Amino acid sequence: MPTPPDTSKTLKLERYNSYLRKFHSTKLINASSKLLFRATLLVALLLILFFTISYPPLSDNPHHRLHRHSLLSTSLFSVGGGAAWEKQVRRSSTPRRPNGFSVLVTGAAGFVGSHCSLALKKRGDGVLGLDNFNDYYDPSLKRARQNLLKKHEVFIVEGDLNDAPLLSKLFYVAPFTHVLHLAAQAGVRYAMQNPQSYIRSNIAGFVNLLEIAKATNPQPAIVWASSSSVYGLNSENPFSEIDRTDKPASLYAATKKAGEEIAHTYNHIYGLSLTGLRFFTVYGPWGRPDMAYFFFTRDILQGKSIEIYKTHDQKEVARDFTYIDDVVKGCLGALDTAEKSTGSGGKKKGPAQLRVYNLGNTSPVPVGRLVSILEGLLNTKAKKHVITMPRNGDVPFTHANVTLAHKDFGYKPTTDLASGLRKFVKWYVGYYGIQPRTKKETQPTGDESG
Ligand SMILES: O=C(O)[C@H]1O[C@H](OP(=O)(O)OP(=O)(O)OC[C@H]2O[C@@H](n3ccc(=O)[nH]c3=O)[C@H](O)[C@@H]2O)[C@H](O)[C@@H](O)[C@H]1O
Image (cartoon, rainbow, N blue to C red; front, side):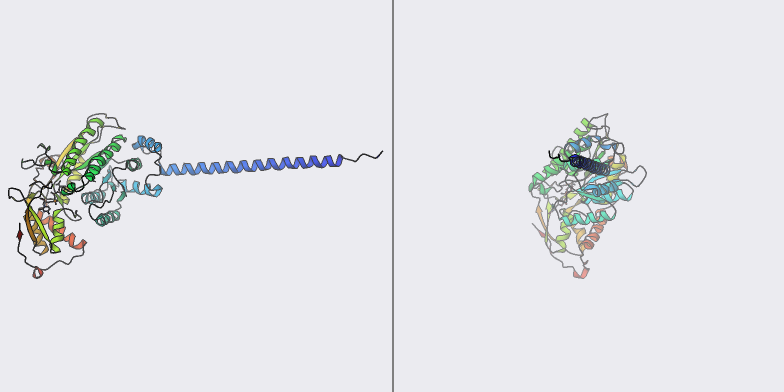
């Protein structure tokens, strides 16, 4: 019988191989588990880091518990410009003086907005600007104002009042104590060309801002720009805050009047502290090119004719022109005396302050006189064309009684039209690089009337 083959060696070898296979697969599993564990840990750490930078703990920022919910529910972590952007928002809005304010200034690249932002920043308040840089007038002027503010460390976020996620994010990132709401569609006559823009900015945008502000915790106090135009066809003289304002002459005026009523509602339901300021034809350096004193200056210098309105009963049209520095003092006075809102997170806790003030110059000047002052300052005779005021929403005259603003925060305008226009013209020729004309160069031209 043949001897059976010796399998003991083969068996041993197989057992050994199987042991080796088991050993290697266990090692492989261990290694991949370790790798998976480390990767998970890294991702977790990165996530923690991201949320810590983007959203400080609520205990650090009690301002917006509600907004955390809305931000999460609508996936708004991506709103704004990331961590560096948020840092800029925080830095700009943080006050540098003890008990300083943190103010959101809407319309910060605008005329009144840029002046107020600088004044607040200079005294140590935190200021964050918001502006949509629309092209109602030359946006390069708004960019120039933005650059000026940047030099003074005021950051302007580019965005629209109607952008609720953006506003929520700003209120979440920066605990504003105050809002100075100056963003608006301005201009009386333009309302006939583009009525919807007045509804979008002055009504829908304002309501959007109030909706966000009322939901914050604590709510900010709000000071906002109303207008002398709310007096409309009022015939009381001078205009006092207790006079009727139910006869607006333009859609612009109607939207500002609507703003005052909307302010009443948010004060009544939610306890928001609201102060409306009725500005009277504000003028000065860095002003608005759509306003008469500004484009009269441009047209006089370019030798173009200008139209001076007279009333339907052949009287001169007059305005209570108010110099920007006086208005800025009024805005800061209103902010300083604004009481805290009483509501929190959308619930009213008690009665809150609701105010309206005239901010005018108390001294109306006919438009013809304004033109004479400009002619003197520019050493140039204007080509005047006097016409009956078109039916464009203009009112014949404005005249402010400022007793209330004086009593409550010491408002006292100190700049007459001639001194204010001198400062404006100095800025204008400097900004546009115009060589001032000497008396000899002046070309006398006859006044044209029509
Ligand atoms: O107080 C306000 O609440 C408003 O003030 C400003 O409106 P107004 O007082 O109408 O200023 P502005 O247009 O400069 O006309 C000045 C004068 O020139 C007359 N005017 C105007 C144009 C023209 O071609 N000829 C002319 O005689 C005109 O009849 C008027 O008498 C802001 O623009 C407005 O946004 C709002 O803030």
